[in-house]
Length: 120
Image 1 (cartoon, helix red, strand yellow):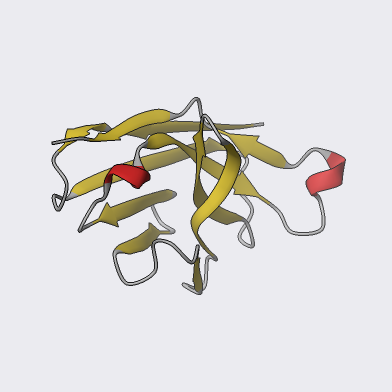
Image 2 (cartoon, one colour):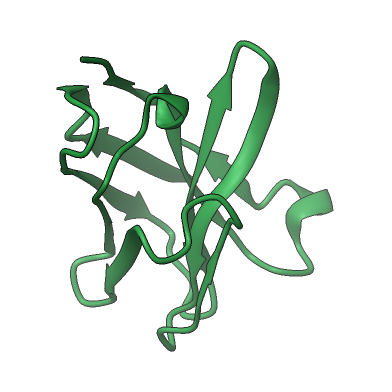
């Protein structure tokens, strides 16, 4: 089992910045992928950014060049630094940890989510 705890959401003005953090605990595998996804009233959980233990990051099209994901393998944490925030970034952000190839076997964990609201 894996537990994910997110923090750092809140209200920010357009153009502002916010940093989200996620801490994983439990049975973490060295090849686990961690990432952030977001859900809005009109879209199910879309990829924001994910990162491998080796540091390879993948970003969703709408956030590339504005968001940066960091990972600390020793602490089993990931951070998402969000800059130049737009109202359309408003969503519930979820931390995810999964093992490629084992998702269908249930090795796919989600946090409870943290609300990010971008509003003037």
